[in-house]
Amino acid sequence: ALGCDYARVAAPHLSAAKHRRMEPTRVALSLIPAPQRLLCSLRYTEGWTLAELARRYTCSLATIKRRLHDARRAVAAQTIILNQHRKI
Image (tube, rainbow, N blue to C red):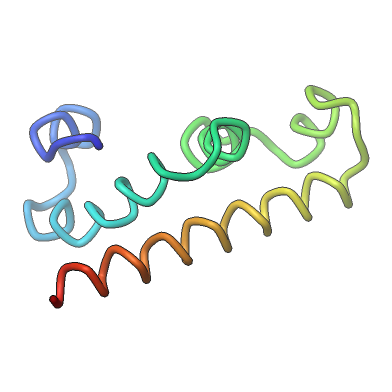
């Protein structure tokens, strides 16, 4: 998982509190399969459009949307699991 120090370097404009809130999401991202992680990174970090992703993956827009949906669900599921473990 990415530590907060790295996150501050990558996004220095964010407050320490926001970094702490984002940590479960970073950890959850690290736990999903690499292809889903790459797709999320290209879309949400690098800012690729859906059309650019469809060209890169040589598939339809609908397929890209489904893959992103599946990736977001995987991150959400991992986040729930991580939060449950934190409460124990």
